[in-house]
Figure 1: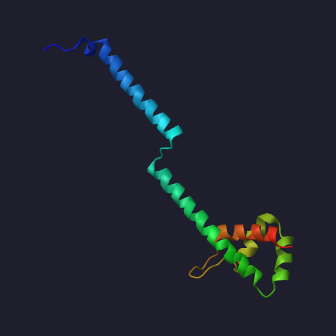
Figure 2: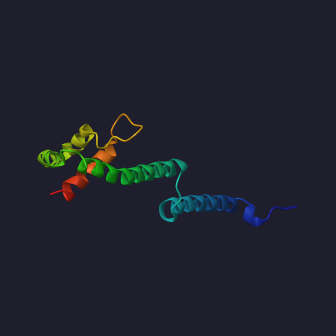
Figure 3: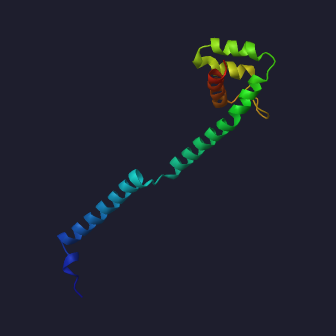
Length: 122
């Protein structure tokens, strides 16, 4: 049995080139425009979403702890007097961003809490 003309010589090379180009084009379009992701990128996105959710849930608690402290007016004055990039450290040191079961303050919550207090308090 003889091989079809399409699978002989240069034609076979062209078929393989077309298949290779099709695979590359499919991968390029899929990853760049369709939304395909690698497992590692999906895991990183999930971890980022978890941190965002935790921060969003704990920031109001931090604000409430700050506002219900005994010397809240004095602390607001101190917070406003500190440079903005150091305010999260003040929140950490005050213990308002430390939650049950943790020895250390949550840095993301402290930062969000400081920003929120800076805008919501007068």
